[in-house]
Length: 125
Image (cartoon, rainbow, N blue to C red; front, side, top):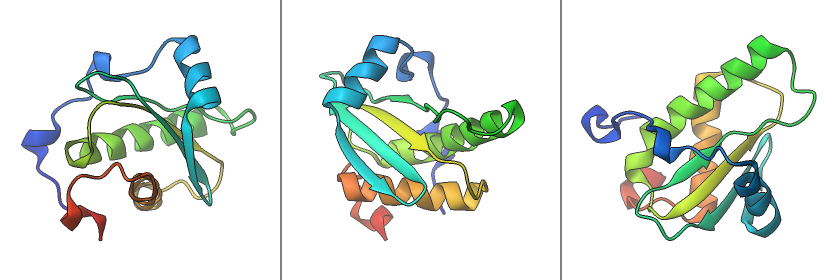
């Protein structure tokens, strides 16, 4: 996977969804796309940035495995965010299973592709 690290920058605080009400609204009203091992919920937010959250299902292993899962997911999103359309709230829900960085990259890329959030045609393949 190639990416321009200058464009991706950092995962800023205003790009995170922290309010429990926002999580509930996305789960209830958001559009849903799923593949084996992951789901993506998204909804337009009328901002010029994407906001993202990484909830986990109940019973997702111990604290170490939960933190590793979120760390992988945040890093993959950080690498992909320059290739995405802006103006969306996004939740990436990961189920327990094969936790590796390459697996997470492929899962999240497929989710964004199915949702139609990728703006670079060359990045889809």
